[in-house]
Amino acid sequence: MRRASLICWIQPDGAIISPNHFIPLAEKTGFITGITKAMLPKAVNKLATDRIGILLLPRPEARQFIFHLAGVLYDLIAPPV
Image (cartoon, rainbow, N blue to C red; front, side):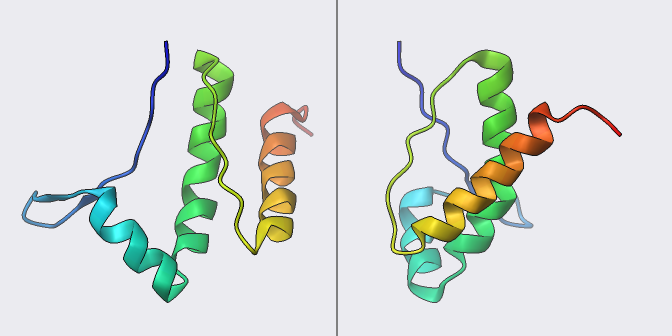
């Protein structure tokens, strides 16, 4: 079984904007990096608790993403100090 988890943009009036509409704009404006950094810890935590997979799409800034992912994974598995 495969599942997908997509974020939605919920406006103050409760209207939901599909990722099909705001992700391309976020990519054009550079906000996609911030969205990814904010959502990645939640996705990794979900992966750890539900044993789900995460599809990673390569981007030009992949090196920075890999370092961020490594930090998120470390935070998830590192013993508390």
